[in-house]
Length: 355
Image (cartoon, rainbow, N blue to C red; front, side, top):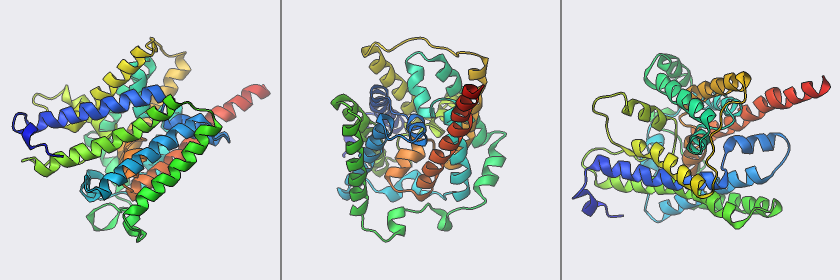
C-alpha cells in the first residue's frame, strides 16, 4: 500500500489518527450489529453450551487470523514488526492479568471493547464502567499502580527482549497460521448453522476480525514510509483508553493510531445502533449492580495492562499474529470468566433458588 502521495499532503500523526478512526469505525459497526462479546461467549461456554455467542466469537477470531495470516503470506504485513511482538512479553502478567480481566468482565457484564460499544447506544452503566477502566489502566501504566504492575510482570518474562511467536517456536511454516484459522472457521460455521444464525450475523461477526487485520496492514504500511517511528498496532482498548484519557488532560497531546481508534469505535457503534433503532438510555439497576460493575471495571483496567492487552487486544489482535503471551492471556481470561460466573452468578442463582 503506497501512502507516500497521502503523506505529501498530510502530517504523519494525522494520517495515523485517520487510520485509527477507520479501523475503529469498522470495528464499532461490526461489533454492535453482531453483539460480539467475549464475556457472553465465556459465560455461555461455562454453562455447558456452544450457542450463538460462542459461534460469533469464534467467527470473529478465525476471520482475524485468516485475514492477518493471508496478509503475511502476501507480503502486506510482517508480524515481527508489530509492537506487541517486538517487546518483552510477560508470562506472569498474562496469567495473573488474564485471570483478573476475565473475572472483571463478568462482574462488569462486558469487556472493555464491549463497554465502549454499549456506551455508544446510551448505556450509562457502560459509560461509568468504561471511565473507571480507563482511569485504572492509566494508573497501571504510569500512575500509582505502575510499580505493582511492573513487579508482577517482571516475575517471569520471555527471553531475548522480545515476545514469542508460537508458529516459529513450534517450527511450523508461515502457512500454518492460515490453516489453523481456516480450521477454527470451519468449527465456527458448524456452530453458526447449528444455532441458526443468519447471514447478517455472520457478515458482521466476520467484520470484527476484518477490522483487526485492517489495523495491522494500515499501521504497517505507514511505518514503512513514515519519517518518524510509527507503531505497528491494531485494535485494542487498554492502552488506547488510557491514552485517550490523557489526550484531554495534556497541553500538546501526540496524534497517533490510538487517538483515532476509540472515537472511531464509538461513532461506528452509534451509527449502527441509530440505524437499527437501538439507541436507548439505560442506567444501573441498583446499588449492588453499580458496586459490581465498578469493581469489574477496575479489575479489567489493571488486568489488561498486566496481561499486555484486553479481550480484543490480546484475545483477538495479539492472537491473530500468534503472540505466545496473548494466547496465554486469552486462555486465562476464559478461565477467570468461567470461574467467576460459576462462583458469583451460577452459585448465587443456586443459593437464591434454595432459599
